[in-house]
Structure formats: structure tokens, C-alpha cells
Amino acid sequence: MIETGTASARMTVTSVMLDDNGVLMSGHLLVLAESAGIAFRPYLGPGASHYVVDVLGPLPVAGAVLLAESTLAESTLTSGDARQVVCDTVIRHESVGLPIIAVVRHCTVPG
Figure 1 (cartoon, rainbow, N blue to C red):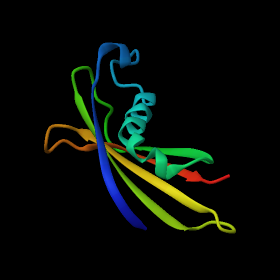
Figure 2: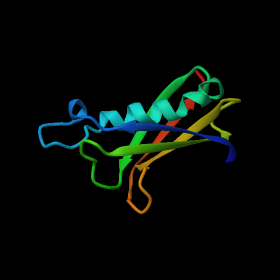
Figure 3: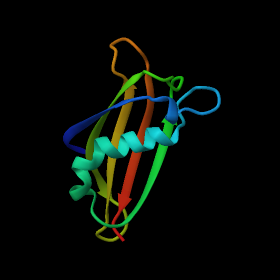
């Protein structure tokens, strides 16, 4: 894979983003990953997209500040001349020393 840069986004967890147990709903992780990866949209291009979300740590509560960092890479040819483009986003607490919360992989295959 060839790395072409990184982009980031921040998000503060609010009470309206929480489920009945008071923790962040996982759908907001995808929104944060999309925000971080928006700089790479021209590289991803048209085509079918899918996301894989791996939650690694406990989902945060209200008041937590999250940082998402995306890295764009280009993989090998898939079929014919189509290239699969991958954008990986690591979501963690902004505070140093706290665990990574999730990794989101956004894959696009031109259609």
C-alpha cells in the first residue's frame, strides 16, 4: 500500500449522542470517521463503498473528546483494471494514554 497522507477530525460526545446506558452509539463513530476522511473523497472516487468498524475499547461517555485520524492508501488491482482504494481511520480519546476506541476501514471499488 502507498500512503498518500493523513487527515483528522475532532468530536465532543454530547448527551444526545448517547444510548440508554449513557455510552456513545457506535453509528457516531462512522460519522466521525467520515468527517476525518472527507479530505480524501476525491481520491476515493465513484463506486461501491463499504465500511468495517472494529470497536477495540469501551465507547466513551458524555464530555469525552475524540480524535479521528485517517490515512489513505491504494491497494493492488482487484479485477481487470479496477483498484480498491482504502481509507483507514483510527478513533481515540484526545487525552494521551487512553486506549484506541475503534478502527474504521472504508473501502471503495470503482464500479
